[in-house]
Image (cartoon, rainbow, N blue to C red; front, side, top):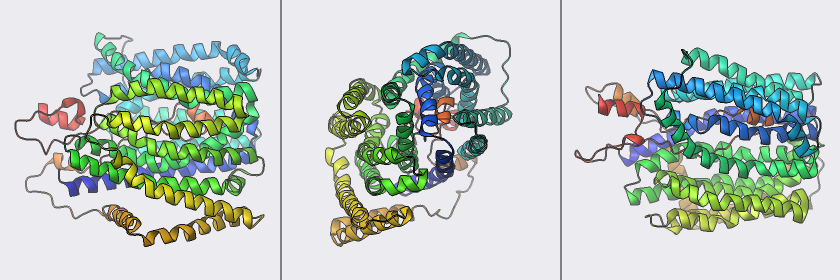
Length: 558
């Protein structure tokens, strides 16, 4: 594959994926704006309490099988039926366990209302057990555009159900109704698309091999889940549902830039970087390009958003969320760290160092969790957020050092492209924050616009420097690649040419029932499921089947 074709397919893939994610984000933003005015912070906090605990059951129920199904090159009908029965059985069993644990969930948070909420949300684990294998099978068999449309349409149904029931006065039950509507519609549509045939309930021996593969995925997922949800448990248990509700809404806004910017880039960067893993110089160039895009898209965004957090949250959520505004501003520190940290994940996976990543996570993620405990002891809710942000930034240095050790990637490939946009982000924050404080206004939208304008004016002179102009040229070149070149199929081309024209993207993963009820954007660690192109190999080089697409594998083996 030539550099031009690879760059073009990567750029097109990013835009297609971003289109689907932006549609989902608009619905997410709509639900956030409307429901924040119809419900109280405590309503969101109560659901987040149950969701944080219920998510553990969701992880155990899946046990990494969704990823294992997608990675499996050949999936016989016998194994597929076994997986359906196994997932349904796990879902039913764990739904029962969640229901039985309702009194203990209420005791954990000292909140009696959680018994009823847990009992009503427990069947969602069973729904997830039916939906997830169907989603994984559809990922293997259908175009990603179909799945993206399904994702957006089901979220639309859920948002409508949540807003209507909240308007009718259901309170926190509206969030459960929103998640339930999404999953019921998703189950019906996926069932019609995949048309599963369960057959007699039987688990064949080959199924356990996939479960074993899923177990290794499960270990990494469990560590990631603990880091991302223990904060909810700590805040809920120590400070109650109102504080947790404020935190959950601030965190939902914080996740949006990561989901809409880094998410699409990552779904394309992984297969592209995996294709270049044996071409060191080209790999390094793409790493530098990805770092540059992340830097200029994400860092100034978080800087300006943090500076205008008070009027921004007032505009989006209303007057009852002032605590959320302060939390959102402080989360900007973590935003810097998380945005840059995505590069580390891509390096681990694309170079085939997933085991090394797991070793790093065994050390880093417990440190983050310890930071939560220290932060809430030191400074309450704000202390937890500040500590989380600082720990995220500090861990970037050892994290990248461990990721690139023994590889052809160098430290300057990461930090070089990031330094200039980071410096620009600091200036943008100071300008936006200063103008919103020096010129008091009572109109939120005017404060936001003034802050953005001040940031633009102050960072403008930076582009008089050659280095910044060079960055702009690279970004403009990236935009030009979005244009689709004329298609000139070679004589005798067949369906394989059409397969090669598909963008290098991965589908958007569905939420679990607990995540849907918590109404937060989902930003997952990218899976180690990549597409390799072997056109640059010599005629005697053998491809690696584990890194090929299903269609490529069949072409090689038929």
